[in-house]
Length: 124
Image (cartoon, rainbow, N blue to C red; front, side, top):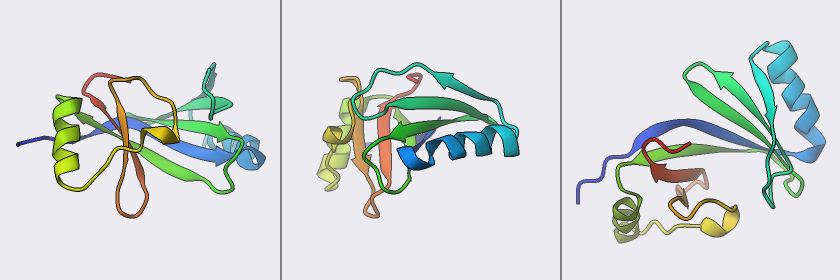
């Protein structure tokens, strides 16, 4: 099976609630990047800000139950189910329970615990 993984444009930084406002201010006021709050309805993310970061987008996600920040990355593939089968055959299981997402996407982790959103090329 020849599956091609590509880096997506989205990077999510999961930020504890106690550090969220200062982090948003850092990107907006100190780095002077384009930062915009986006409405969100998600059981684990209470607020989110979109940060234009060159050709990428950083999502600053406020998570009320985290004690430290984590960076999550996007992977795109032509076919999610084919890629998921490939990953499973190589001992990489999905971990979709970590955060709600559409049915056509999956969460996976590398051995160090970095979270990746696996989705079809062209999804946001």
